[in-house]
Structure formats: C-alpha cells, structure tokens
Image (cartoon, rainbow, N blue to C red):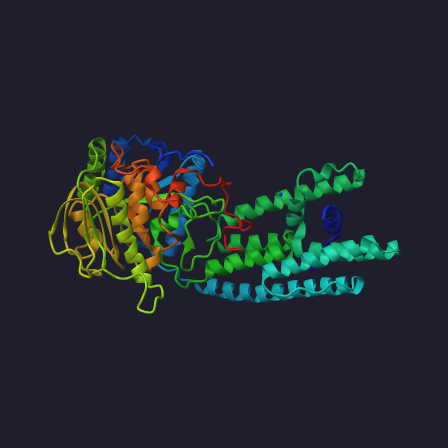
Length: 570
C-alpha cells in the first residue's frame, strides 16, 4: 500500500505520539410520545387503525408514517431496504425523533415477512470481486505483521512471534511487535539506527491503520502537545480534519448499503483513509450484506435494527435489549405489531387492551407443559426438556408468590378443546400448525404458543395458532413467520413474571425477554398494554435476581450503526 507524501507526514506525527504514550438508573416506562406508528398507504384500513390508536393512547398524530408497500403478507428484501428502512429513518430524522422514539408499531397492511435476499447478476459479480479483494488484503496484513515480527526479533532476542491468523490475532501480534520495537529502539546506543527502526514501525502503522484509526487513537488533546513543534501541531490539525471528513463520508455511504454506487464509494474512501484493517472490515461487511443464505426474517424483528447500517443478515443476532445482554447496547428499537385476521380483530385488540387495563386483567393462568425431563436417561441436558422446565418454573413461581389460580397440565398432549375456562394468561406448546382451542379466554388475555410456522399466514383462513388465539379473544401473542428454532422464543418463566409485576409495558416485557433480532418472530399487541397495572400479583423483589435487572437502564450508546461499531460483528 503506497502512502502519498502528505499522508505519510500525518502518519509520522500520529505514530510518534502513539508510540510515546504506549481507560445504572431506574427504568423509564415506555410513553405514548416515544412510539412511531408505521402504516401502509396502500391499505386504507392500515391508516384508519393507526388513527384510532392515536385517539386511544394519546400518541401524537404527527408520529405516523405511511409507507408505499405491497398490500400483502410478504415483501422482497429489496423492498424492505428501500421502502421501509430508508423512509422510516428519513421521517425520524426530519421530525427530530431519532433519539426520542424507542418503539416502532407496525399496523395491519404492513407486510410481516421479508423474503430471503435474491442478488442481481451485478450483485453476484460484485460479491466475487469483494471476496478476491478480501483475500488479497488479508495476505497483505499477514505479510505486514510478519515483517514487524521479524523486525522485532532482529533487535530483541527475547521477542517471540505470536500465533493465530484471525484479524484479532493479527492485530494483537502487530501491537506486541510494535511495542517490542519501540522499547528496544529507545535503548539503542546508535540513535540513528533507533530512528530507522521507529520509522519502519510508523510505515507499518500507516499501512495497517490509516489516518482514521490513528486519529481516533490520539484523541482530541494530542494536537495540543506542548512538546510538539508548530509544524507538528499543524500537521496534526490537518490530519484530524482529513479524518473527520473521511468519517463523515463513510457514515453517509454506509447508510445507503442497498445502493451499489454507495458501496463502491465506501470502499474507495476506506482504501484511501482506513488502512488495510479498516478496508478489510468494510469488505467483510459488504460481503455479509450480499450473502443471501438464511436472510428471510420477520419484518418487526428485523426492524429493531433500523439504525444499524451494515450487520450480518444470515440467521439471527443476539437481542441487545434482552435482560441478559451485558454490553452497552447499540441503538436497538422495540418493535410491536397491531395485526390480526381482519381490521375488526385489530380494533378489538386495541379497544379491549385500553378497557381491561383500567380495571385489571382477571382470570386464571393456564400452563400446558409436556412432561419432558430437563435431562435424558444418561443425565445429559435435553434442550426440549430444558424449555419444558421453564413452564414448570413459571407454575411454581405463581403458586408460591401469588394468589392467582393456576391450571398446569404436564402431559404431552395439549389441552382438549374448551377444557380450561376463565383464562387470563396462557402458555403451551406443540401441535404444529394445528390450533386446538383448549382455553376460553377472558377479555384482555395474553398468551402465546411455542411451535414453528404459527404466523406463516394471518389474514387467510388457516389452523395456525396465532390466528386461532386472536380469533378466540387473546389480545397479545407472538408467532414465527418461518422455522425459528426453540431458542428464539422468550422463556415463559421470564416473560410472564415481568408482565405480572405491572411495572413494564407489553413492549418492554417482550423485548427484555426475547433472545434474538433479525430473525423470525413477531409480537402482536398494544405496546403500551399493562394488564396488571393495578394490583399486580408479583412484586419486583419476588423475581429471581437476574430478572430484576429488567427494571434498570442498560448502558447508554451513541446512535450510530457504523462499521467501526463493536456490535456489528467485527
């Protein structure tokens, strides 16, 4: 990699300074003005229902965006990118809502499933070229690191090259070699030779890191170093300005990941300013974006990552809003849906949720486990049994800590038709794609059924569980638009206990317990619904310690989804 003369001067000053230097609050419940309503402008019912929700819940009517989408249950990957992500981002920015809105609410008429990505011929050719360039850059990084290690070994007899060829391992090896060279050079009796050794390190730093990373390492105060000359300070200021401009350009083009010209511009800016390592990260991000395997998803689950620019779209990602997520979360939104077999069902969900919340949800808890042991005959963990145990855990907690009546069935078969009356909360599983109306639900009931494919369709007659539960009166439920795998479902002994405290809205309960984003599950229900707002059956102190974390803010994060983020897979 060749550096022009001015870039070499920038790198020289940055490297010298770097070598010379070689560090919760109470949870705020979701409010109506923190919600953005998303409708389909091609569905009159979609917009009418959103207007009704504004009236019922006090969401500002200005916080409603109508998208140009197919009036269908499914949309293309490209449609989601250009007709959902782009206009929703634009709307939030234009209305100064980027940092205010915490929850997106999609309505009847907005497609709830995204088809797997299908590349154009040009995109397939681009992917081939990206992989070739990636291979070449990896080779250059490996060679640069090897050269540094050879240099270190030549002047420090105790130095030993590192191991590993992942990017993280290569970066660690380069840092170890640079530190060894810096230490050895400082003690050389031949000062001229020491300067030559440091200059070789400076060149390697420029090749690997580029000015963006070097500028970030130096920080804002380094340009004021009293020991630096006026010329050095001027060069530092010029370097900082160039880095700022490059970052801004990269952010602009990252935000248009679906545009091939934007992807090309981003690569060129990275080559010019981000060094081999930064360029490799850009290439990896774009390769991931253009890889089509396992890229189908539920619209709402994908939309949680609205502010993320590049991120792997294959399979799933860990939900940063989950109570067990320990890092400072990247900008992730709660997303809920108001949908159903027909507009009348959606209206009933909204009105009933508001009405029941005032009086409080009444009725029993119906839990339909399957009697599967958490371990097999040899004492090994059984994944199905472990999940079944969460249902029994829920039953135990409710019996010990509340006065609620409970019906637990721990046999393999689901509840027989209409065998459980007066039901407020329900959770059970299996009987795939074959709804059995085992419960008679009270108004405002909340319940979900763990099985695959139960939201493949919602608006056409079917025997899927989501449609059946809504038709029979449940106002809040979830389902998968394709095979989600068992690990994708919220655990019953997490979801329902949080709901029973009455302190969190439905949206918060779901997003603090659902494990995955960019995957297959959608939740239908009023995001503000709190069925146990008055006289909650559980206190926060009744919960297991790890669930109590749900009532504290997670670490704050800057709103950005850039490739530099540690939360985008790099």
